[in-house]
Length: 140
Ligand SMILES: [Zn+2]
Image 1 (cartoon, protein in one colour):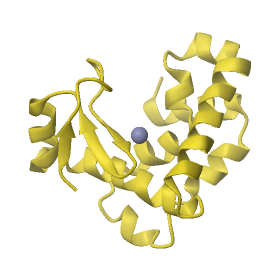
Image 2 (cartoon, helix red, strand yellow):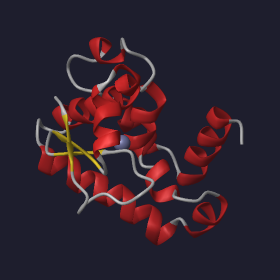
Image 3 (cartoon, rainbow, N blue to C red):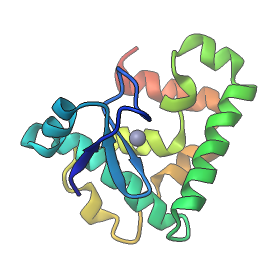
Image 4 (cartoon, protein in one colour):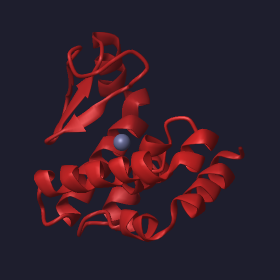
């Protein structure tokens, strides 16, 4: 799956995102990096999202609705968590926690052939628990 440049949807500071199975990047430089070897981790990250969508009744719509739900939930009720971690609604989203947690593990996708399911475990955790886990994983 090659990356496609899209400056309308992506702003500076973002490396890329998956949109209904297509990887979008903010510049040709990012697309080249993504398509080159050093972008393997980022490609893995986006492929984990693909497997997560497979785990959501094999539906991108279901994936994005759930993704939006978790994002909005953190925005609405996670005031103290958002005060402690910039971009908490994104970084503590269960889908992102799984994708970031395994993006450097090139064998992860082969271990979850029936769809990436670890996000379900994060979704059951409270925001404070997710914040603690994020901090311990990133030594903050
Ligand atoms: Zn992601």
